[in-house]
Amino acid sequence: MTRAEPSFREMFRAFPQRTLVLSVVPVLVAVLQSVNVVVHDLPVLYGSGFAVVLLGCSAVLTRQQLAAFRTRTLEDEWLDRTK
Image (tube, rainbow, N blue to C red; front, side, top):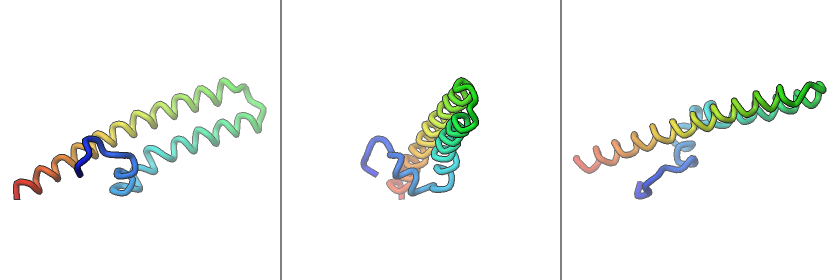
């Protein structure tokens, strides 16, 4: 790769299951929980607090996975150059 930073799309192509579980599924769960709160007429504070925490965790996990992917990409590039 010639880019300085890997993209989410490149990470998704390399590790689709891990990316789905750590980045996409938490967002869907947060949305569904928010809909559940509205449908069952619960206080919005319950659903919004849960959604904010879940989205924050998802963002941190996605950044960590991108950093790990970047490290792996750099290691692979370096090993290819030394051969």
